[in-house]
Length: 115
Length: 111
Image 1: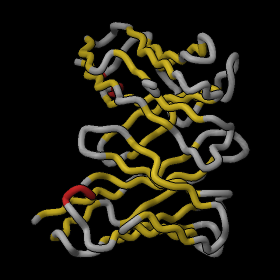
Image 2 (image 1 turned 120 degrees about the vertical axis):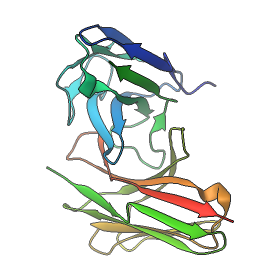
Image 3 (image 1 turned 135 degrees about the vertical axis):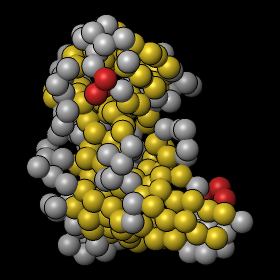
Image 4 (image 1 turned 60 degrees about the vertical axis):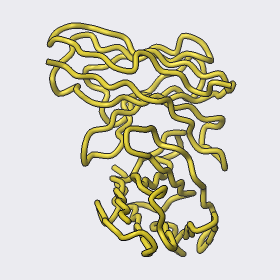
């Protein structure tokens, strides 16, 4: 049981390049999320998907797009990377719309540097 | 929008000392969750509190939810080096499934 798998683990991009961060969960969770973590800023929600086929903006969606490909997979795309998007990106999933007793399960993260 | 603040931002203790982090929300929460993130790692779910005034214990960790359901605390008794990491509280935002995370408290424990 792998939980939440994120790829790649590390990435360096040049300004203006595009890339897609992949996330897959094998726990049959309905809800999936993308957060970014910056020093001193905690975890900030970029996008989330409460169920297959739906996506919604979070706190910091500008510069990102997402796709809920199926129940297992939720990808995050940077169309034109900027240095301000240098961060650690975490994908997470949860069983319920409002997690009851189980919390979020996080992936191991993608450390992205934009130069 | 909803804000969740934690204090202190950082605390350095000697092994064996106690540690407490406090979490305050700008709005009433239906429940609050706590997570631990080891250095270089990812957040790991610790516990959820739902009831007003609820207290839960996990070995040396004691979690409390305030009577007004706007604040919470995590207390660690007799810290160990394995307690090193950042502790986050998180509360649901509105009626959706998303959580708003606190700013986190980084704990450093030295021998």
